[in-house]
Amino acid sequence: MSVPTASASPVRRIPLVAWLFSSIGKKTVVALTGILLVLFVVGHLVGNMTIFLGPDAINTYAVKLRDLGPLLWVIRLGLLAVVTLHIVFTMMVWKENQAARPQKYAVSAPMKTTVFARTMRLTGLIVLAFIAFHLAHFTLLWIDPSFARLHTELHGREVHNVYAMVVLGFRNPLVSGIYLFSLALVAFHLSHGIGSLFQTLGLSNKTLRPLFETGARVVAWALFAGYAAIPVSILVFGLGKGIVP
Image 1 (tube, rainbow, N blue to C red):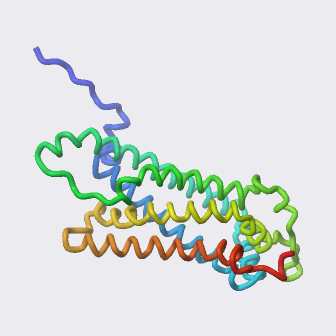
Image 2: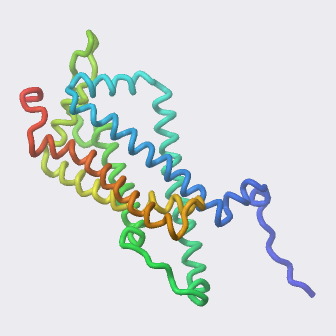
Image 3: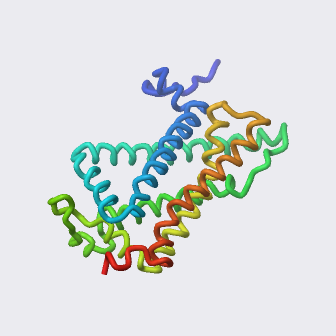
């Protein structure tokens, strides 16, 4: 007599859902959400770099974002959803790999991994904590509520003085230190993450893999240099002196 097997849930029997929770589906979600997050990191850096063009430039950039109104919150919630999907599916892929590891190792030698790959989960969790800190610091203004009182006039309109907020925020050595350390971990995470996207999407091979890995490290540390330039310029080189008391 045959033993009945547990059937999949009705939801899991839907073709799209079944594919989504398959090995390749989970990896594809990780890759696509990773691409979206990298694009956000690049775009966010471009906006942040306007601080080097003076107070009016970055304050104008901030006003344009605020003028998006409800759409800005749609973007923020969408970004939160992308981050959540990336984390959840990354953990699912990791658990799947852990479960399959003994079988894979029985037939072949394990792939060589870098320190970037081996610390992906750890750096990812720390990066998540950094994102929460960043939002609390410059978006929600929980860490220093006095930032909410910073205003300036821009083209005849009173607006939040984002330039002064950033300068005052990074004048604090502890805050700048936290940012620089966290940004280094972001670069550490991206050094492996960007390169692995191509492999996950089936665009890599033995010939191209070293090129993708090198390119990923160049991009990751270039992003670090761009983001780090802001707190370093303020704390070390005095950006904003004479403008922000």
